[in-house]
Image 1 (cartoon, protein in one colour):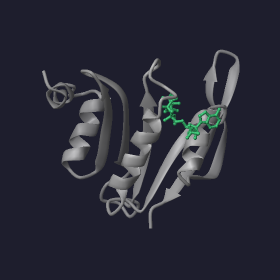
Image 2: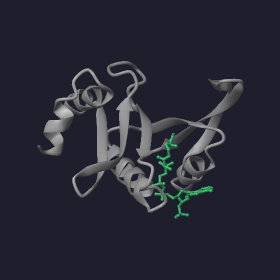
Image 3: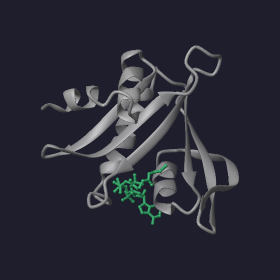
Length: 138
Ligand SMILES: CC(C)(COP(=O)(O)OP(=O)(O)OC[C@H]1O[C@@H](n2cnc3c(N)ncnc32)[C@H](O)[C@@H]1OP(=O)(O)O)[C@@H](O)C(=O)NCCC(=O)NCCS
């Protein structure tokens, strides 16, 4: 079964939701494929379509364990930025403060920190902060 068909069938899931947003022009989604497997994906999704903030795209990125540190995240991010030009004016994202690798990658592409949310995530008795970042596309 081809990739597009597999994504179309994921209605009601995050992939189905993003696919629908791509069709309406409110998202860009990219996948990295090795053989027949999706090993990474990213999306830039309009946060509030039709509002006066619809020039902002929210970014998400993940590369499957076992395929990391081979340049896949960098390639996905680079392509997502290129495809976002003319569609979004700014890209924003949220990343855990202890995710030094992701923050390093985003900084490399010009993302800047604009905020910080203490204790954004709680895992057992551990607390983690969120860093908010943005990239200007114009
Ligand atoms: C973060 C993630 C997407 C990166 O993808 P990846 O394919 O492993 O990364 P790449 O090999 O393409 O990119 C490597 C870049 O990351 C940065 N980087 C890597 N290790 C780093 C470190 N210890 N400190 C700072 N920056 C680092 C560098 O910019 C590096 O580029 P370089 O090799 O040219 O120096 C991936 O590790 C992942 O999916 N992690 C789990 C999910 C996640 O954290 N998603 C992001 C949440 S917002």
